[in-house]
Length: 370
Image (cartoon, rainbow, N blue to C red; front, side, top):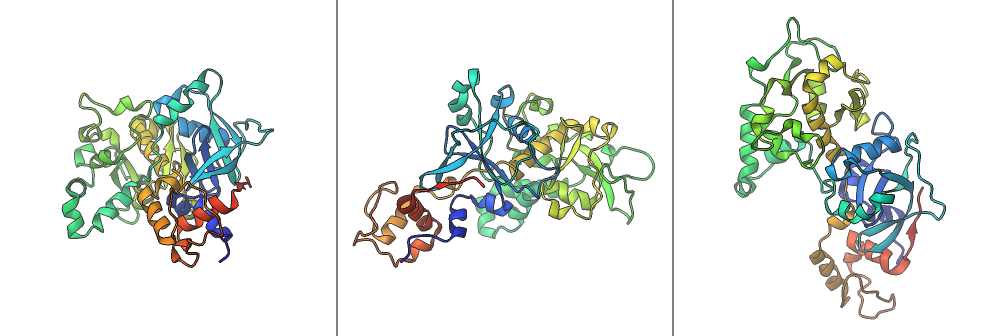
């Protein structure tokens, strides 16, 4: 057999399933670890992502980064283990200016100076890099459960049932006089009931929120911490068209309250025919900004943050692969192409682990930045 995997397999080997689902072409790695912390498609997010915006968004997800100066450079990727890569900065690497628009490629995020000693500590308490679902997808996942799965996940079923019982805000939380007008498009309720009062974050969804260490979140906490009653308030209600609310509940759009309430689009293919403004009006957004920000934090974990593929292939799967192809050893042990014990005809070589193993042991290449 040939030991050179096709290019599409090489690309897939260094991408997590979340990166593939986003069709990502920008990958951001933490400098001291073989850990990818973010990825996105340059055409999907609007407005276009700059270095400064990317670093600011990453910092707002965890208190440990909030007062740390972060830098970014272009980088190559060095293949260091099965599904493990680390950034390999060019010798003449330069810090990228904040106003630079990110183009497809690999980037390294790091800190220096007084903050440099914090590198390891920062990554030990990272932004949530495991796959996170949008609010809408979380509900869809529950709806698709089999009866057996529902028995195994009673908390998820409880959340879903509570959500259905309080899907819309109570009438006493409604506000405004005259015809209802969408906070985004300015459109009124035509057709009838298209524009309604809706939760910014449905109260039962607080259990799905993951940016628990985010700075500024104290504005939403009570003596009991983050709970349903914190979200059961009139300030967690806005007026919105159902078309836009579908985007909102699926974390396709979000509001950056620190950029003059900018409307950020995370999948422009879904918003092409919707007249979204560049910013919300301050008088409309200010009363509910804490909830807009909470929604934005969750949206960043759904649409920007991402782990590498090393989190998706546990050790037992790697050992199963070794057994299938006749390799006796550890996944990291080097092997020879002419080893007579290896079954080169095994279909296991066509799996993601098999293709990754070939790259690591037989090619040993650096993945260049685009």
